[in-house]
Length: 455
Image (cartoon, rainbow, N blue to C red):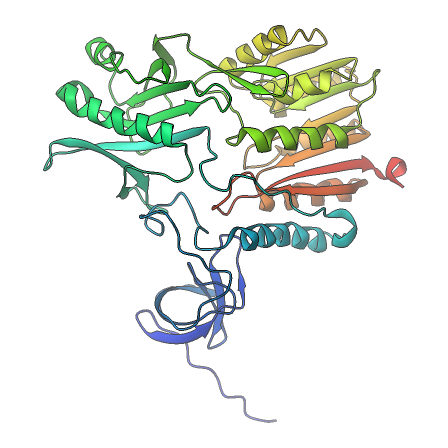
């Protein structure tokens, strides 16, 4: 037997020459070094680099670029001064065409892993017309700098609570940026009353330009609330406060106290109007959301006698669009304020065939089906954790004929599709969308039918 020379193990702190052969799902370059997979942030496919190893696990290692020796044609200069320090964007260094190709490729690989013909089921990705300045909402960490005696803002570095300080973000409008700068100056000016403010949430209507600001503070005190309520900026129509004692945990407290204004914005999508409250979910890019919802309507193929369930419905955007063509559309969402908005949105748009329930989908859906409730079409639009297994099992047991899955996480999409395929469903179409340019995130709308119907 021939002797096989064992490759030397790579060591933390040592430097190696590598070439990136692909990108992982986080946008990191992937290289093979001495037989081990190494992840290297900000290294593009085909680029040669000298790297230093930061950590070594059983099956992979992590490193960073010491010297990049070749430059990919897909590389561009990132416009953000804190790109690489801030955790908000992962791929600003990639040309936009390369970003969308990479994201489409990730959806194609999911199809292939599931045994599907990617050429048949995966549609070309729908990219954004505005790869910068597209977000209608931002959650901005803030802190008091005792040395400089002023408030400063920024974003947390990846996987830390270390702040990359900046007064600009290239993903929000210049008007939003101006309001945030003004808010930091205001917090500095009111002194001790603002010392416990740890986040600012700012939302902006893409159609009217009106804004809504929420100050997140660690302590509940009326004098603090009164001081914060004095904030003024030209576009800000609502000022609210939420109390969350842990500045490094979830930013929302149990309640949102509206101190000035109506407590909501009105957003438009075509001829539709939607009320959006501080905590209500709305896709962060309004124009792309409109395009994505139109795709969902096409995939759902709702007929006038259908009963449609919109699971994880948020403010009822999709529920109301579906209700236009259905006998009955039912939206389910666990956040009470979002359901209040959804009911108001039905009234604003004069839709009478929609109804809404405050409940966890995984609890409500099995009860609905067990009680004999009719379901012809289900639209699932879950958070990143995917569809709760109890909800998925209930839909499968009810033999729902058609489903549409709106995914914001390829990993949980693959997991849930595997369950549905095993249960006898057939994937008709997978349509990726780039809702979040400059980041690792990719959305995908998937239409499924029971195999007896789909074949």
